[in-house]
Image 1 (cartoon, rainbow, N blue to C red):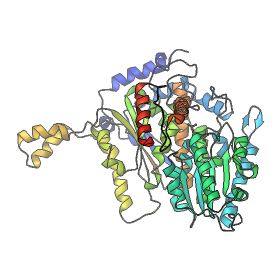
Image 2: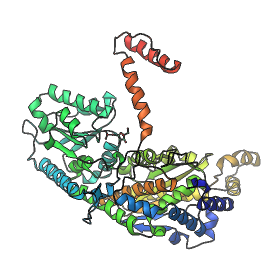
Image 3: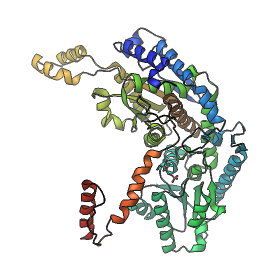
Image 4: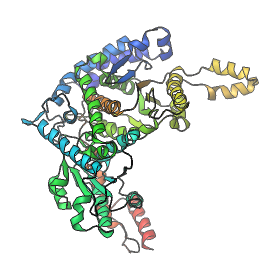
Length: 552
Ligand code: F6P
């Protein structure tokens, strides 16, 4: 296989991009009144408008040709067939199996895994219902109205993002804390608000070895024992979500209180598995199931829609176009919905841990840019913070604007104002403002010529910044599920185009190993330590400085 940038499809796109460079997106709109219909797709309750990108029919044809040449359709089938496409870990990638309500069977190494998936979902349902009905109580007989989810990365971001997004669906009187950071303040702050008699600790970790989670879980256990609980009561207050039964048992949680998933579920793709139990506890199992059904609807669309009308495929291809051919350094995810405020953080892990890679499946350097930096904040907050750089900075940043037409909590004119901003920003980013317009405006405002000369360069907007708009009727469990699956499959398609293994994350390992080596070198408060010498002078110097402060 030639390197990606030497393939005829890539070269054709590069030549086409060079030819298109001088044209402007707003001129493409002026010359094509059907642009909106032409460059929008619909599916699973979502509508994607990608017309505000610098693309023409030729661009789309060339991108589809690239997708065909990279065998996106074949890769999709290999994933769904349960082949070990996570080649560096020898694992299948089958999170779609967790939400397949078409009763299809999925196989891994010849084993039909679907009955296990359904059985575990039933166990989750029974557990959630028993907590909600009060059948399952704390050790003193009080109802368990508080959940503390202890997990990090994929064992935190998915459940916490979804739980926040579905706030209107929260069961009255229930609350959930998501504790991820090993910074003890995170756990302490939550425990200060918890009653040990009514709190259920959900220890969520695929490996059950993650330092942060194990440290927080051990501290939570200690707090529980120091506050009226005893060893016999642990079973009523601690449950585990994991693939590692032995480690769960070693922690003191027995099989009955463990909810399992499997190594073919990647951590950042795991909210559909037992890892979603905290969601079900907060919003009810029915709503959790609706979330899964929404994701399934997007999977069905992804599986069956022709590439040109396939939302994840088109979102991925336009992303590749902007990243590799238009030079976008980063990609902003901008939900115009306050309840989606954790979506950018969630997608940072989903995208950057998946496609932040520099070598391809064969171990050779890919030779083109891969996953972009993902950033974002809910609109309109971001507008008053970093949008300045989107509009006038020197880097090109592409963006997805996401909004529901109807708010979960319609309150007077708020949502109309929000929507007007959701629409105005992409329009402004695309249109820009010419020097001529700026000068005319300043003249009309009565400015003198020397002031106009001084101000005009600062007040003009280059425009021509590419954006997508994703619209849904309302944020519901179903549309949220579809939205998450849209991004998961987009990330998958981009990984296939770039020739990446999107399902490993070796890049997180080195820092973990070094932290373990440094840990014994950090002084406990009041302890004297000899000078650190094992590292570079910067790291030694910082350790010594910290130890001087802590030892004093
Ligand atoms: O360090 C990265 C990572 O492995 C993520 O991929 C994962 O989601 C997170 O840590 C948590 O892992 P675990 O669920 O095994 O505790």
